Length: 225
Image 1 (cartoon, rainbow, N blue to C red):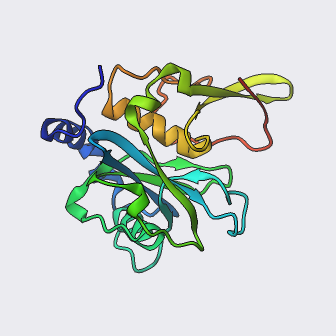
Image 2 (tube, rainbow, N blue to C red; image 1 turned 45 degrees about the vertical axis):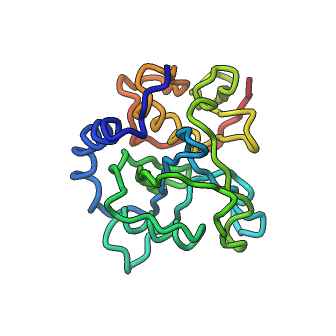
């Protein structure tokens, strides 16, 4: 059964679990931050995603992501980076007191530090948002109930020199496939929001604690199942 993560009790629980990481990580320098927006769509809890514009430069154009981007010198901390980028990308203003906490950072293949920031944004119709067309092609929400169904979960095995190396989660059967760092952040959010309801797909050999931060090795060949 899906826990009521939108309730006041659910919010308090998440804030309590994130309090230590938030106090430790919020003011640390980071290259980028993303907002993980927990919203209510037609009364059901959901996560809000963007489809990055195909007109953007770089390897991540056209990918599914959470709203966010690079740190700006005017940002006070990673929370302000995530909130500012969300406002610029989606026109969505999220008050600072709606932020539940800072999740552990991850590092992409270029060793860029990305800090996820979880926030409750309340009832939302994704179609009512007016995203910046220079940055975002589409905005969509995936209900937690959808993300938690086994048939909508997949994984990618990565190999190095012909041998299995590690496994990352993939989320399927929505408007777009959720993979890469966005899928990893989604997995951590599900473990936080719906404890016991999600079977983690992430596997990193040699690590006893799968909590981030960690980085993804370069030049890997992948096979998806």
